[in-house]
Amino acid sequence: MAAPRIVPSRWVDDSFVPRGRSDYSDQLYGYGWWIRELAGQQVFYAWGFGGQYIFVVPSQQLVIVTTSSTAVGEERRAHRRTILDLVEQLIIAPLT
Image (cartoon, rainbow, N blue to C red; front, side, top):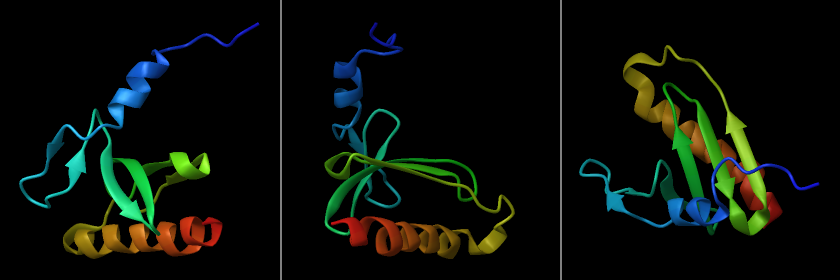
């Protein structure tokens, strides 16, 4: 028996297509996903408050979820970069 689908697979594929670009960071985004390259792989990620992320790396059939401090204050940009670096260097790069 097939598992029930919440959304059509076509919609998931379409959600990964760039639909716009941030005026602040020039970062691409689709339907709810930010889009960037990490370790040479195209990565789609949902970005929540603090360091809450869901990363999807289709080429590796990989999903990575992070959680971290919600009290990052003024250092939030460095905090975000640290999470991206850890995911890129310690998870994605060794797999590619």
